[in-house]
Image (tube, rainbow, N blue to C red; front, side, top):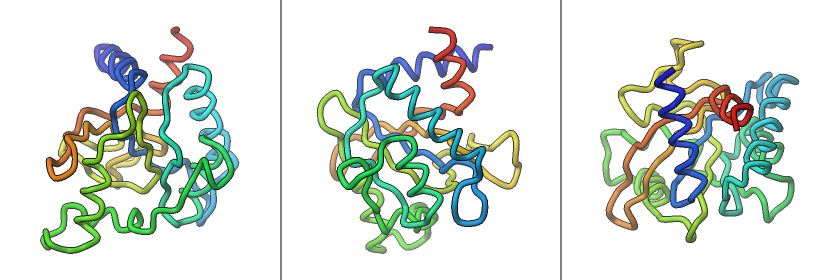
Length: 179
């Protein structure tokens, strides 16, 4: 229960904006979403809208079909709502050995950039280990479960970012039902 309370607190924080939110895509079927994944993405989007969690548009997605579909179902369809961010498909390079690689520099710059005031920057991508504590409880082969939301605190260009926590889809749903 304390884990839920901590994440309720974290959800309240993101309602004030100022964070980078990195979501793993919803449940896939091949390169697109399964029917369950489509429901999951819509549900998360409904919670963000109903509870006024502020989003900076466009939401940036990896160019892979399941991330694009997740972004559009959760945050809106159209060029103003979602935009493909090619380098997001290379998220594994973020902690690679080559610290001078241009893709790594670009990804770090994206995550350390502060969003517009009172908004949260949103990225929809793939499984990634932002912190050593991350492990999907439903699938030990992955760090993030479907639609887990990693909360990062950007420190500004050139100043890196900090891992704050992770909120699962079920925790968003529990928070939405509780409030």
